[in-house]
Image (tube, rainbow, N blue to C red; front, side, top):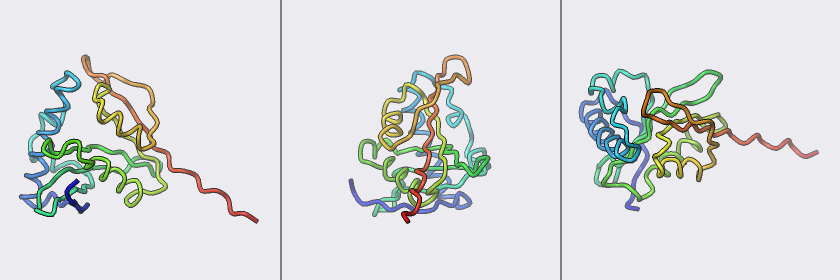
Length: 164
């Protein structure tokens, strides 16, 4: 994979917000095809609506300054983290960007915390990614007719007690 760096993204910056918005729409359009459902909420939201979400954002940025992918999350009840979006630019598919972002998040952004995420149950690349990185699949659910979602949880390992 060409070199990328993980950086915090500030959606108050117009250029950053526009890049995130365009990348997200392109990635969700591919997911819509994969899962056979074009009603993904992020595909219908405006740039202003996307920016209004109270989310934390990080991106994988190439050496050339291109946004290769991003991850957005929010704090959940009980100290858990809920991943709201994990998107990769179609130009960067199959190059490890999603793995890089998710591994960084688990190790650096919320180590030791419970992490929750959902994806379309028919989104085989995403399902495979979460399973490969140690997420446990919970029951599938259908929030709206025609859409089956898979729920995943990553529970941080409990540290071993000190030896005496």
